[in-house]
Image (cartoon, rainbow, N blue to C red; front, side):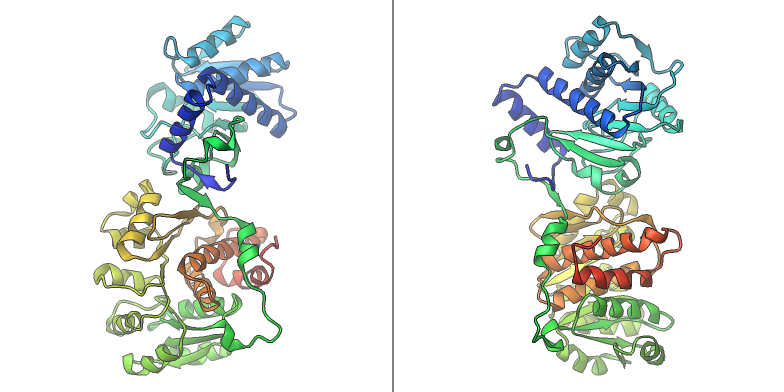
Amino acid sequence: MNGNSLYSVAQVRELERAAIERLRIPGDELMRRSGSAAFALLRARWPDARRVVVLCGGGNNGGDGYVLAKLARAAGLDVAVLASNPPREGSEAARAAAEWCAGGGEVLPAGGDWPQADVRVDALFGIGLARPPEGGAREAIERLNATARPVLALDVPSGLDADTGFAPGVVVRADATLTFIADKRGLHTGTAADFAGEVAVDALGLPDEIYANTLCDARLLDAGEIVARLPRRDRDGHKGRYGHVLAIGGDCGMGGAIRIAGEAALRTGAGLVSVATRAEHVIALNAARPELMAHAVSGIQELQALLERASVIALGPGLGQRAWGHALWHAAIAAGKPLVLDADGLNLLARDTIALPAQTVLTPHPGEAARLLGVDTAAVARDRFAAARELARRHHACVALKGAGSLIANPHGEVAVCPWGNPGMATGGMGDLLTGVIAALFAQGFEAWDAARFGVALHARAGDAAAREGEAGLVASDLFAPLRRLRNDPGAK
């Protein structure tokens, strides 16, 4: 199994079925392996813990918890098991619970008093829950989240949809999650960022042959691939070899957006960057960043010569949706050149769907994605994977759906998930910066899929580097220095 592979719930169930039917591994044995792996992680992460409370549900996830409890008790720890509901009679979980009790363990109701603990274990629900927790389980999750003690979640934090990363109700806020057999795609995007904590994967000893016939649903972006693929500069290189980005935008009062996009393209290695904007912004652009070739453009006639010289177009930052922006938008798309479409460029596309160039990257945030799909933002949040794939299919373009765990999708249904980024990046200008980064990679020879994936990665990693001084107060221009450093040394921290 590739360490970056992410699977859907249905795929994981198929892998588990194959292990049981083809390899003749009993379900009880898989449960013992899960509980053993979880106990090993607990000891490694919290070696000084002496008191453990395990919250068990009635399904197989609860069975994993009973196995962990038995192992912890055998190791001399003080262990209490709290059950939200009993396991189904005759099930593997019921047998695990019986073994816990046969060894002298006691099962207490989760609705009663909770013993003190150094670590609490969430074994309430597994990967099958796609509805809000109710009744005693909901109350147990709320109590668990109210404690100040660390929490280890087994397979997935209870209440989180393992397929989508969406939380339809209350969710366990875990410090660490150990997921079994294969990594779940929903642990790495959307709400999961607030609840899963550090995610570890244990394949439970299943051989690679089990995974050979199941293509993963998505992949985490791989820093190693970026290191291998980003080109070094030739000693005889010249600016013409590294492409010419034309950044179009900056309607009245919005010159900062197009300046950020243009400078981001420069810092990511584009050879030349021209900016087509309102006349009122040209002096400020020349003063702030003279390396940008700023042009006052009042209409499509003045834009045409710039379009002819450009190799890549970055369209949308500060563009507006008035007549000026709409006219430039139409002309830029009609040029047919590799295109990064963002901000008002996307809002105009939602109003006026037209064919896009073959090499196009769309970079919507959830609100823009919702407008493009004709749904509300909540629908995008409920299944970010479906939204990204549908946008890519509908517009025959690569799509970078921004947010926690940004998703990059292509028209063939492939999805990459970004494991980097931080809440400090939720501020104005960050999307404009991403537009410039992707455009610069386009200019340096990457096609849309790689430009989008590697651009999202560089942007997020630069954000993480800039956030070392604190997330609150981070601004887009703070990323310029680490962005340049990472473009030149993508293996840097």
